[in-house]
Length: 500
Image (cartoon, rainbow, N blue to C red; front, side):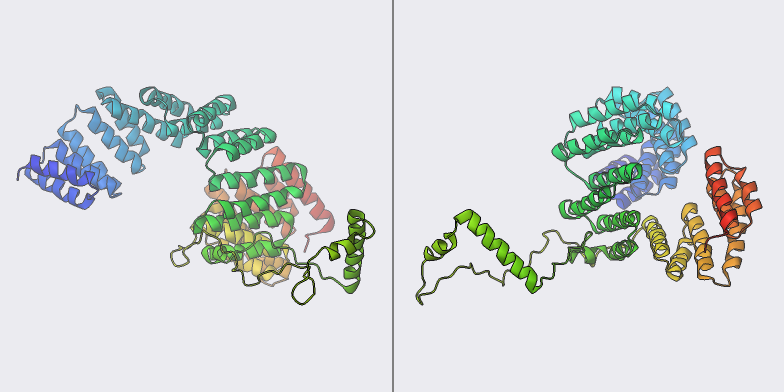
């Protein structure tokens, strides 16, 4: 079998998603003809499909070496480099591909990919220009419209962002993404009434996803932060319940709902319910299948004999008003007697009816552990909930788990929260923990002088340990708005001492 036949077979195997076979055949072809660009391209295609992007870059690079004047081969190389995270090299390869010329299909993909690369590197105006070039070649495309709307939002161009979102809603009225883009742009501008209008339109026309219910919750939370109306938190919790009831969630999505409910309960100042929701999120399939209630059902009232007497008197009064003075006697006489000569006034109820079971159930065996991001979020909420309950021993325990996070924000919270919890417990190791935390935040500031979060936590540690002069000195590193707020905190702490 010659190289051309092997390449044809490799291409066929690739189309049939037999990637290992396609790679093996491509390498056999290359062994017979090392200068065949098609052989190297087939190998690159199979490696890309297998997720081995760095090796694919090498194969596509060899294809370019064998056929240096072919723009399509340069595009393949740029695509692989982008997938491998080599964004600068990818930009250079795409520029060369454009200069050499590509097929119309690859040229449209080239501009689309260039737009994505520019977006990832923060060059939003360039991203928009490339996406518009791609749109002119492809025509109306949902993914391009989606990216353009996001770029407009980042550029602060709400008008064009909304126009783009409206185009999405026009061509895909059942796709929630267009409504969501409009909602986010309006919320970003503080136009909450208009943002709520987008959610109403989505409810009427779109196929609702978990994102829709999440946005309903975020809107109510945003309104609550503006006006402090507690009823908005009730609406937010109802939206979480709607998501679980209407959206047929996966186990991961159910866990997200329980975590979101915990956040709302913390805003309510109800740490016990927050902890209950977080516990449900640990085993979401089990909790969902057994009908864990985001909003617990109200307990039925306990009636005394006086309540029963009052209810009978009220019924007699109502019957007299509706049927007249002798209406009850007439109603009794109008009821037919049974075989025993008595009358049945009540309808019997079948107490053997089966309990209603949700139609959608989750596989309790197949669920996977929560992602590191969700774990971090849960540990942060547990820490906050136990701190609110003044159970500082548990708060310190979850704060230590937060310190294992790879995300600096959660790591910082964990270090400060543990020291704070130990201080409130009056533990002898509290001062040692504060010294370690202050040293850690100092090192973080030396590593990155723009790390405002590290500065803020270091200042708070100084306030807690009553080193007010150092706290005031560090405030000079912050912007005016943040600095003034912390200086007020320091002044109050000087007057009353560090709060235990």
